[in-house]
Image 1: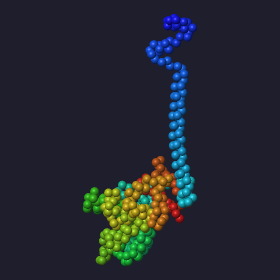
Image 2: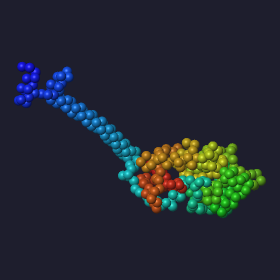
Image 3: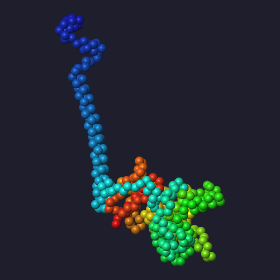
Image 4: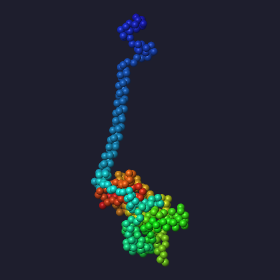
Length: 352
């Protein structure tokens, strides 16, 4: 039978495969339904493998995060049960602080950019409060109560270390009005740019808070001379942090403080903070900025020279204004101070 007759015969009964014939003419190979089926199975297998691989990766990531969380929980449990450290938030309570309280406390940063908004804090008269380890230049001189208490302790130990001395407190609390007079005199003598590096403008002086004081010396004729912190008086710079004091304007920090070196200007900030600044050679501006990096969940940890352990952290003021909830541990000693800018610094004593 000829090919033509074969085709006609098979078309009659619907058995002729035109597609197969076309491929045959082209020299190609017919694709069977069985071959397409196997290809579909391969595609499904690849899809299953991809899904399995994705699920495996996700399971690994989740298990890793779970492991980290479990580790953190174990560390928190150890910290609480073994070290006695509080765990946030379970062992904390909230203390409400108003926006105005940002400007209160021993860690308020007062400089030419941040005004002193408190005119004398818990002032006491030095003539009624000081000891015989130093002298005062004015019987009506005032200073912050806690500052005076620590001042007495420091100068009592100083006198024990060096014997009789000519140390005198020449200035402590200073009103805004008096600061204005001193500022105007300095500007008139040296010009505004230079004068501002020696005297803070009125309203921006630490003296207005009562937390600072200036040292001078009594000369052989009974006059008052400048304190340079040298000789036996170098003891003060070497030891003042033990009593909560810092040399507020160090010689190598003028760029940060905006004020030239003043070895006579002493500021009370508390033992913990003074110790940290001294140990790491930073001024108050640098310290206040440093503390902003630490929160209650991951506080700055510090051990002082007396082996006391401390945690220090920053709580930003609420953006909504009005008041801020400050977390503090329930069973630990703590202190809250505003930074005079944008929040609160919490200092916690971890051991008893």
